[in-house]
Amino acid sequence: MSVAAGTPLQMPWLPPGHTMVLEGRGEVFYRHHVHPDPTVPTVLLLHGWTASADLQFFTAYETLAEHYSFVAIDHRGHGRGLRTPDHFELADAADDAALLVRALGLQSVITVGYSMGGPISCLLAHRHPDLVHGMVVQATALEWRATWYERWQWKTVHLMGFILRTRAYPRAMRWGIRRLLGRGDDLTKYVPWISAEVRRNDSFHIVQAGQSLGRYDARVFAPTLGKPAASLITTRDRLVRPRKQRALATALDAYVIELADDHLASWTSAREFAAATLALVQHVDR
Image 1 (spheres, helix red, strand yellow):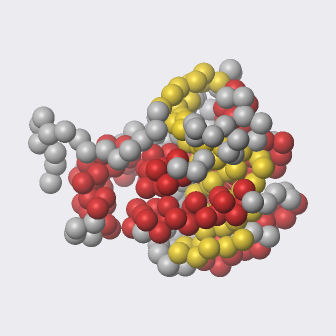
Image 2 (cartoon, rainbow, N blue to C red):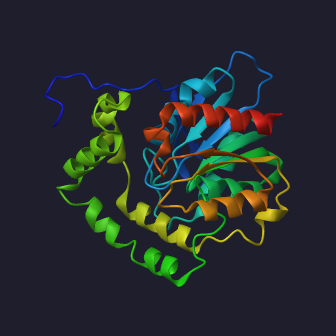
């Protein structure tokens, strides 16, 4: 099924989008919602691998907007994110976010990092501790390479680049999203928009981001961050195993909320995800 020519594309509510040139790095895209109350904290949303800020958090945007200001950045090579000839490294993505926060004149933020956004959040707190008031990590891990099998999996991630560039990929992706959501789900009307957003990704940087994840290990520095923290653990997650998520929560001494869903819980349990995200941010805020 495809959208007929001339048919309006249905989109969820999205806050205003902006671009900014980060000196020496390039142009970044971000969304910025400013709450009417200037005293409320600002939340920094850090999305996962192969996603974008919108794809990761659109189901929570409105809920967060009622209570907080927030900035949602597209990481380099993802969505409308920065395009650069440099190899993707998680530390560089964390520095991109830090430069944006400083350029916006924000004193500090509460980070919300989903999946790959978790390592970026931890690296941001490690490299720029003055900018991070507190941390929320979601469906993410302390490390991604503890076993030989995990290291082998990440070494094969380059094959994903070939798949992303095939002509059959867009149609297969739309079919897969509809099957994931199930018939009658409220989000099915957004499938054409979701599909179009996914295709914004740069396949080379996506592969490099996966390889950078395969090298990530925060077991040494995560317990030393000393930030108020909270964690969303997706207890049926087949991509980031719950035991790995719990290891990160323990290292951060994080308050935990559990959600009985798989890795794409922000879509498949949209209301529960939004409510849990708000509760976790409020816990860290307090």
